[in-house]
Length: 203
Image 1: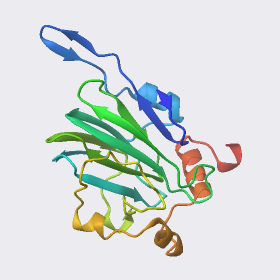
Image 2: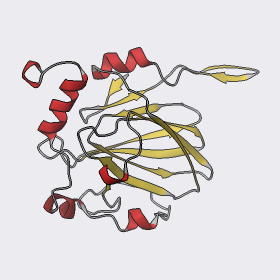
Image 3: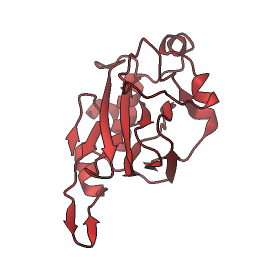
């Protein structure tokens, strides 16, 4: 697995075996993720979304602890998947990085607890599967408006974004800062250490 520029985000680029029957690939390997992150993904929930072209979901994140780590791939069509560092105090706070997930290259993306996640469907019927470390808990779930100019995410030109009512009403990053809604980088780091079975002092 290859770590992205944002700490806590990795991309898996599997070898895809093709023959006249179709293709085969390993899109998730627990030992590889545990080696990269230092701890495994405790699977609690698996989600599947199907989106029309232009659908923009996110930016979503959850309170830490416990947060919600995600392992994401696109099994049909294509999406532009975006990781946003929402951890106040992080060296890459406010930074984002985009990875194309599609049914050809078969990349998968892992996001640690505390990171924001969003994606835009580049095709109709774009089908995205999430493995989640924690189940959905509405009281701990939050969002940032994906078109916030302060984030300035470079969404694909020529595609009109389609947002849910909830995502369209999400606060800007500045509003979330003022409201104390964002995760702390130090709290996230302590939580990662806990997940690794270490005390924060032994990080």
